[in-house]
Length: 297
Image 1 (cartoon, one colour):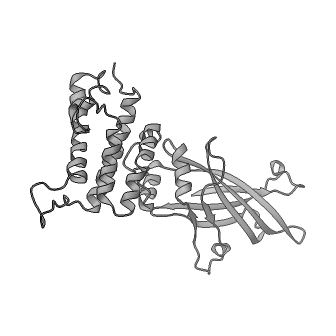
Image 2 (cartoon, rainbow, N blue to C red):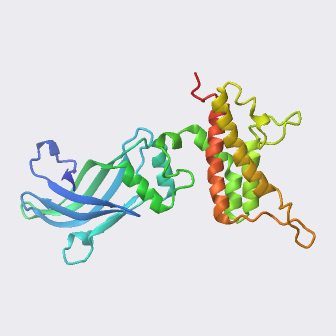
């Protein structure tokens, strides 16, 4: 349960000298959506008569993201016990999630700001504006579970560490595979795999008849400073993925003919999506390798 102390915010008030305040209480429920529930507003002196308007917003505690994120949708009916309303939705779209992921490094801390207009008993009845703010925390595990339900797992894979997702190599790989993802969205699975192969090939030294990215020789230059055993492992990874993309996405089935023509190797949408995801990881690794970030001594 979170509590925000609300003080009068008119130009004639000074909450530092105001010993009475109104409390705004709520809790968070995070699953496939984020909701504020068990919402209450009360005061110690029982002066509160009516709530006329309320606005609630949230900002990430980050120097790099200062605007409100998402939209908290308040409804005054929650304060009416007989109304049946018990919660408010906190709506976050893909742009909000992208912005948050751009600054997140673990658990999330938000500042919740509340502004309201209320009627209080004071020398008769009086209408006053009140405001207050409070920091809340959303754990990394809750946040990752939320964006997983939201379906936001293309650019920011939910099972991958935040350090990788915030690394420029990951973003660069994502951008390089834009065409492959566009092919996937149109159902062009073979074109998507061929585009993945083309991106991987762009990192190779294909001159002097060395072959394509499925040939170990083309990786000699980019991996020249890496210890032999590790180099063999990396080459196995790169040539293995490239071989799949080449044999399934590029070449037709050479063993079977259909009315005199060679048919495409069968591949469904699910398989192609997996290989686009695998290619994203491989291209991220290649970005790190080509930039010299191999952690070799």
